[in-house]
Length: 342
Image 1 (cartoon, rainbow, N blue to C red):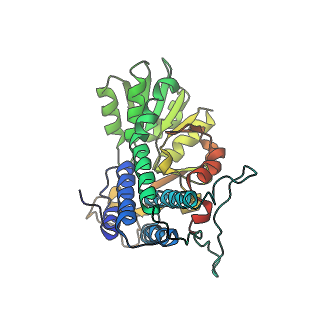
Image 2 (image 1 turned 45 degrees about the vertical axis):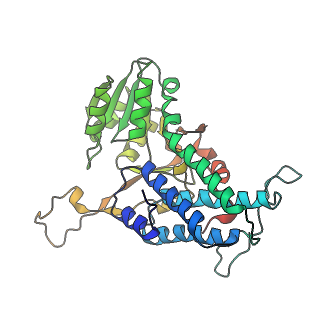
Image 3 (image 1 turned 30 degrees about the vertical axis):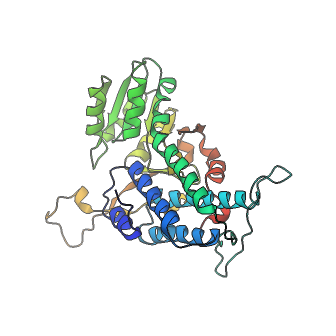
């Protein structure tokens, strides 16, 4: 399969042709690898600019698409780390045991310029490609590393509540069902009703499943031991951007003091804030096409829900469990603060 061009990739994002966030992340990484391997650049600074241009273009055209931007930020950190390693550990641990970073300056508009990586290093291209290949291997294993934790997180005779469709949550519950017997309640997830698909998939692997309407979440929550959901994005404040219906579900869980766990790979951790979460989709999701409506009626359909950090108990990731209050620290491990475009 030929690597995508930047414009082809953005068009595919715009037309929503990706099956999952995982496939989106993998193709994003393929594009970045192609840029590193084939673009014309001599210094680390030139490569950083090429990579960040992908972030800037996606942000300008599709600001709600966070996964490709996260992949760019991860690639920027890899380049900075490999460059620093080549020149003798400029941004490695200093003698006092604290992290230091390549020199950065402020541009006239107040934005942060990229780190200075001006030396031409012949080994840099190969070292960056090798590091990206290692990250690809980590990316491909992330869902499996989360799913295997299901056996330790779920106990016999528990009642689990989830909603809508999430392949990662399905794999998590399926793995747990190999050694545990439990009951799953699935909220249907209007207006897409992908909860129907989730309930059918769970029942096929032998898990006792009950499908309920979204409006029944609150009265059913008193019977639930845990809420387990997926997410589109983990935000910088520890909140999440996810499918419609999650906000009401999380509020009900908090009211009844039911723990809410979010299954998410680390590539979904983003440095955007809660104010940048939403955008509107097609009104056809709730009103059939050609339905006569008065001209004064506007149809607004949000595509995502925001769940604040105080309603999330913990994130189950491919590395470890992470509390919402710890997200800011994890972001500093994943991405280079000096390379982030603001």
